[in-house]
Image 1 (cartoon, rainbow over the protein chains, first blue to last red):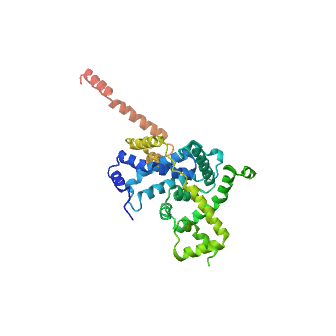
Image 2: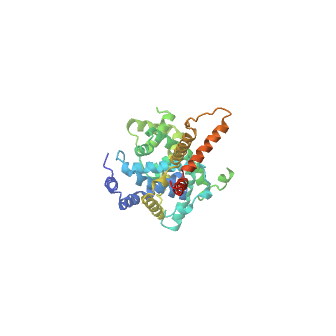
Image 3: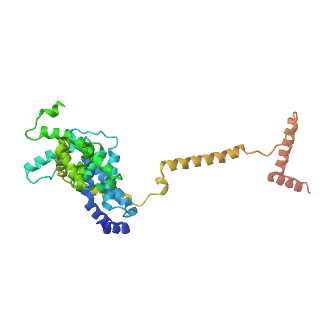
Length: 197
Length: 158
């Protein structure tokens, strides 16, 4: 395994617990942690809570981190575990009206592109919310964060086979829903098919 | 010839470019003959395109302030140990204190007392007299009584 890119920073933090070094780690991971949390829980305020919890855990536990895995793997693991813990017992499906469109900003350059992208992102996000948190976590790590099967397997502490089978199940569930959402919402789609269901 | 069930297991690997050699050839041969698997490949490919377009969100700027506040609160000097007792420990401590108080008090109440002499029945009057005389003697022994006794001796020329 190549050397962990966070090695120096983590080592410095472990030695002195300096707030500046922690801030540097925060800057490096804030968007990844927040995006992962948002992808799993689907709620802006809750994603902020999860991110907060995760960074507090990082601050408290980095002293015990011993580089058996990459620091990024460990950070993702803390994020996913915190998000799954929070998602437990919550309703699985959130209606489209509850999607916080304001969050899905800064996507395109021009206003039209931005609008189209926002709509597409909202639809994908809506489809994702029909999945269980575990399947969502796999999708988020694989596609939003672009991690490999090996990394996902290490983060979730499951076998590669389980990663693949969960990903396959997630795709099979997403397929019909995405098709339906896009056929009703994008130009030229049949407006009535979603209402009928 | 690859079966459909086996082929489905390879769809994700195929799309990720992880299939190679004979397996890849078998899989591609299967796709030509199996419209369902071909459709599944196209569908998942489309989904992957959509999902990969999902941009990373930016963390809200005030997130750092919230974390910093919580860290500062954690780093504040700790309060006196008694106020930080957890409820379970506090409860156990209270039980122990109450139990020791109870034991201390009950040992005084229920401890065996020194034996008292039992008087025969009907001797109550005799006992009263005895005690009364003793009290009278006691009065005499008191300092005032002694002074009076001394004065009377002097007056009498003794």
